Amino acid sequence: MMQAKALIEDLPIEVVIADKGYDSRAVVEAIEARGAEAVIPSLKNRAEQRVYDRERYKDRNLAQRFWFKAKQYRRVATRYEKTARNYLAFVHVASIMILLQ
Image (cartoon, rainbow, N blue to C red; front, side, top):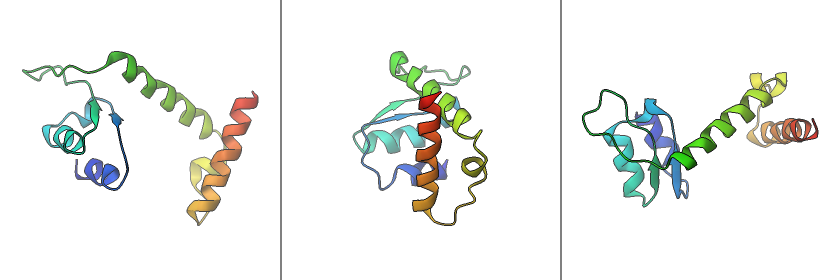
C-alpha cells in the first residue's frame, strides 16, 4: 500500500475513489490526513464496515470503462512514447477518437 500513499503525496486532492483492494487503515488515514474524502468500500470480512458515498463510487466505473476503451489504441496501451508530454498527447488523441464514436 506504500504505492497508494506515494500516488497521492504531491497532488491536491478532495476525493480519492478506489476499489476494495485499497481498503487498509493506513491508506484511508493518509487520505483523510490530507483533508480528502476516501470513497473506498470495506472488505466483506472487515468487522467495521466503513460508510462511503455509493453515488460517487459509481464514477470509478466510468473511469475504468474509459481506460479500457483508450487502451484499444496500441500507442496508449504500450506507452511507446518516451516523454510524458508525448504520451499525454496520444492519450488526448485517443480520448477524442472515443468521444467521436
